[in-house]
Image 1 (tube, rainbow, N blue to C red):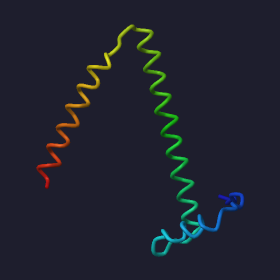
Image 2 (tube, helix red, strand yellow):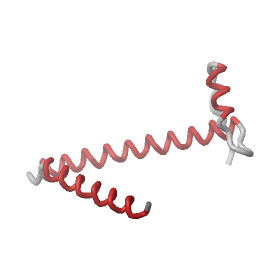
Image 3 (spheres, one colour):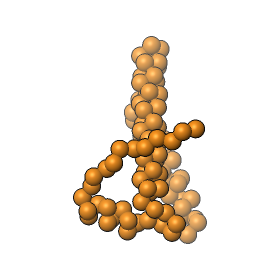
Length: 92
């Protein structure tokens, strides 16, 4: 597979210095930029998929007329949060 290049990126010297300051052992600025690009692509793909599923769920709810009241969802989320807090407290 042939490789391609990303256009040069001109940044403020402070930004470059900050990026260099967080490099890990064996990492260089190019690999850091490549990893950042890959992670941002993955995050945006995940966001796009999340929105697609949400819109599909909305369309299905409208089609079937079956909705879950927000109060029920929030109550269940509160219960999940309380259980997670209790489990975390036991681990300490």
